[in-house]
Length: 409
Image 1 (tube, rainbow, N blue to C red):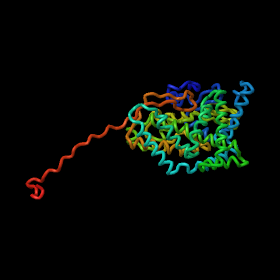
Image 2 (cartoon, helix red, strand yellow):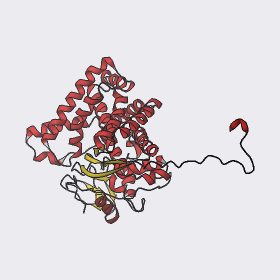
Image 3 (tube, rainbow, N blue to C red):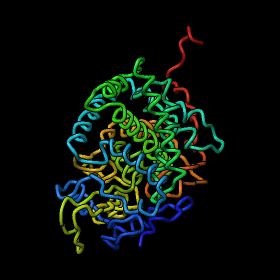
Image 4 (cartoon, one colour):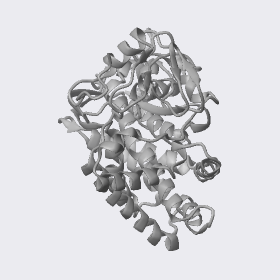
């Protein structure tokens, strides 16, 4: 049985996730409620089926909280309810359309060139000593994505504010300290956007600012969209860049196309390992019968390790052009930021391929929670190919029977 509440800070849960996908299609509800589904076919079906949606049912855990804690938790849930990813009402369909429009064209030639340049610079700067790939390579590259969307002046503060929101999303348990930090960060994000409405440093921020003034949406929707995009653009991208460094060997880069390796990186990364769906009415899931509002926890990470779809699932290999994982979801909730994430990971892989370098990790720590993959430390060395010895080329010999011209003697 998969330990949903285990501490995975020093243990890679990939083996446990792969075992869950191979051994048991479903796991009955844990303390946070809902059936767990692990296999790729079941997960993809529920993600795309009209019998399920993302509209959240009542959280039964709130009943055990004191009134003040329930109020604060409800305030955060109301904020999350504005996110396009968390429901399926007409409002959410409209805001998803807006978000797709705002992110369309975000992968510009300028961003690609900038990411390629930063990747080359970071790999050249680390030298031969031990370093933290997380700080020296992954975060600087992910910062470029956020900066392209929100402007270079505000990127750092937005990333810092979004971190507390990610911390709260990562935990499978109710944690009031995390909830309070997330609420404070939401207030900070709202104030940043309020000030940015006049400067509008990028087309994306300009579009979000228009939502703020639109009576059909308003400040909460605008802040929610900004928060969802920043959290989605930074932390998951950092995770994928760390997986690329930790898992991609030089020899594989040498003979496998970068786009195919990129998809393998996302398959193993799966930064958000779970997605929740709720039954719209009575429905069967395998041997289980669900009533309206019942929750199913879809384990995207286990589905990406299903041996029926990915033989030798823990190995990175060329799986063909059609091998697309569930890391970005499926159906109406497919991640609109997928092209951005793909472009920056591809830039890093291309840079590694150009240099012929390979990162050898010797110390890895991850955040302990299973629902998200986030690194604390990824230390190691960048091993570069040995310089090729120069072989002296002999001077051409004189043709037999010929003597040098007197003019050359």
